[in-house]
Length: 416
Ligand code: GDP
Image (cartoon, rainbow, N blue to C red; front, side, top):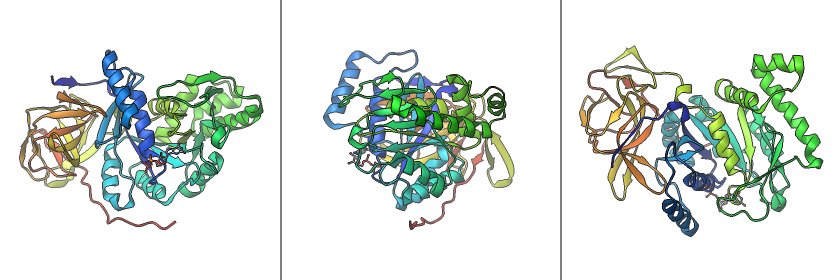
């Protein structure tokens, strides 16, 4: 049965996961889908049987993201993962997906560090001011070096890093992370199985000094970006509780484009749950993004602002056309304002054609959900559109707008 999705936008995260090929984007995404697949949706607990099926399926073949936008839930937050292609050849496609996401996780190979494609996609994300976090993956590999990778972020990406975790142990002895916000160790013992949780422990004695050094760096970097933090720090020193520090990290990530850095190994399931917590804590909701400015059809001089609210006239951007084996042609749309309703008529305000919205779906890793209507800030797949291409705006026939037109430069091949 079709359902209405008008979630409180504060709990929505539209994110992308970006990486150089082989850094572990697919593995990280699979782990995210696994962990989120066994948690709860707001007001509704997934049935036990469904959870079992999910786990069996996962164990059998691994769940891989196949959709241009996959919705999952973590701690009462709705996370829409927008697929961002990692290959340089798909630069235009990367740009298109960056246009519709609100925040991103950049995954790094802990051995290779910052690689050429990371630099390309990082620059593209800069262009759209996408707030982002970094996940240094593959810390179990021989030669992995978290600190070198962080140095490379500073040097090659010009990033202002906020190191939030330190690895405990290295290579095959990597067992967990020191959380510098909570000043606790999060440790995965032995071979972790799917869904296995970490133990929260005191920071190992031999890491106490390093942890204090990095905690001081973290607080000082935040103080430089945040007057309130600076004032308290100068008066009383580091007296910050966890919620205060998290709020400051969130502000710094969104407003000042500082980059929280986390680490782990997606392959061995160490570090992915804290990464999900950080997505919820630090990456923006659609309400944190500035209102989008479009223009009147045929009149680029007349600007029209659209806010992420269900009470505004409908406007959405088609960003990807995909072919689904069961459903045929699907067009992925980000709703920027108003509501998108199945069966309604909208206008493609780029070519002036009327379009009837057929079925609307929210795509999950293991199922799709038919939706009657969806509110601002959401990303859905729409069936039945005839004359709509990527980059086109769909709008309310009585209140048309063309959202910022998207033109893409030819792909640039970067040399290291
Ligand atoms: P993508 O190209 O970025 O999507 O990378 P994949 O997720 O496909 O990973 C590339 C390879 O690295 C695969 O063989 C993975 O099994 C492996 N891999 C991913 N994460 C880790 C990790 O944390 N540790 C190790 N040792 N290997 C990993």
